[in-house]
Length: 449
Image 1 (cartoon, rainbow, N blue to C red):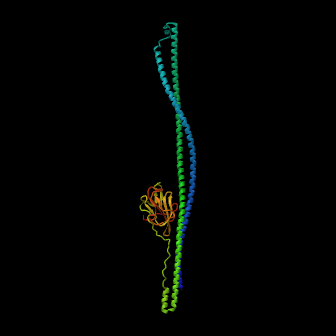
Image 2: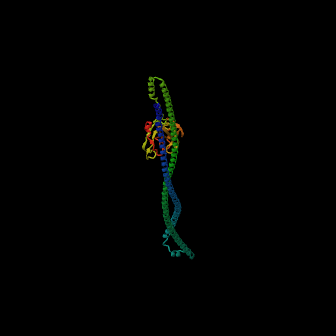
Image 3: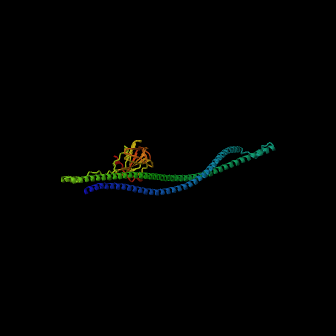
């Protein structure tokens, strides 16, 4: 009787260490998930602090741009004034040049006339007033001849004086032209200097705007990325918690089933032993030996409780193709900057089906910064949490929260997001996906590459 009770008790207790171990494993998973969430929160706090610094830098650059804008406005006004002065000086210079041309032509005609008069005077230079007197036929003729000679002499003097005056005017115009030309050149030099200063200020503004735009883009990109990461982490935590709860529920049901089975077997065994003891009292001594053998026979074997959290540890290949960029250090194909590639790139034709690497639940199926169209799937494989990422998809064929099987199509191959050509960027994380991808492992060995 004692042996039977001990055996029944041992059958009941056999399941306890197994169940305890599974509970401990589940608790460890939940603890790891909690720790990862804490690390993610810490990283988010650090990023928020960095974003505050970036915002301060952006505001400082914006202040510099306002100062440069004021300088640009001042220089633009100065250029307008200088341009107006230069245009006026140029117009005056053109007018003076026109006057010089006209004056030169007039002087040429006067010079021709004066030359003719001088030639005539030279021919008749031997004639005197006495000849005028003696050649006169009468007194009236004499007076007429004398007045005519005086008039001609006065006209010649006036012509000479006029010519000399026009020459002086020409010289004055030439002096004025030189002065105006010098003034114009000075204004043009001032205009060039001011325009150069304007160009420098404009270039400075362009540089500041580029810096500001870069900071704003980085800030917005970082904010967007962090918002996407937080949404992803939140949904991931919810799905993983659901998966772990499903495992826990299955384990509780398995534990209850194992206990019930053990108790039923113990009860059946006890009843069989009781019947055997009753039969033994009525039998002969030979029957007692038989009864003793029956009592000490080993009990029927019992099945160990099933660990429903166990799963195959292999993953299927999400797409066929050659590896264009393996896991690990590389130069970014877009920026040329050295980085750690946290997945592998598999090249194939656009539209090639992409399949889930293992059974799981879709965490996210949407567009994301950098990834383009992307699908995140959470898996429980071999009692562990795993996460797969399928990025740069041309199309997505699943939805968030959907349960998928291994080999089920989740999208088609493409080149969306930060991509240089059609390929699948595939990531495998031992645990949950987290910013910075600290849990990423080389997918190659797991999918046969």
